[in-house]
Image (cartoon, rainbow, N blue to C red):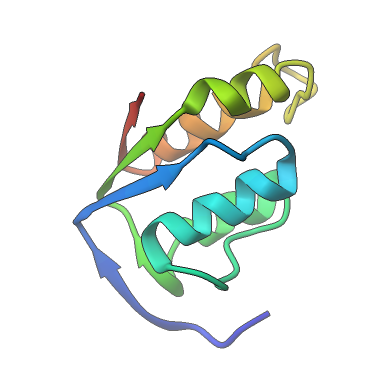
Amino acid sequence: MPAPRPDRFGGKHHLDGRFVTDVPGLHCAMAEAPLGPGPYFGREWNAFKDCLGGGFGVAPPFTLTWHDSEVASRALEDVVANSEEVLSYCEDIVRILERCGVTVVLR
């Protein structure tokens, strides 16, 4: 795990969702949207949630516009992150983002 770095707050970030077809790809795209190529932003649901708490270069509040979000929604519709609920992985990620103070715009 990389050393914590100062977080940026605010701003508008764009996620290119054209090629997000699996969970690792989703996590990679989620990190690259606000931070550029190469950063870590969680490899699974719990790690992703932890990264939103700060120390990984960006922290809420910010706006994330997820372009072509339907690609991941279709590809991951049967993947469930939380066995206690019936949300798909993508729906759950959006819910986590919003609960943490991220404004999510699905396109």
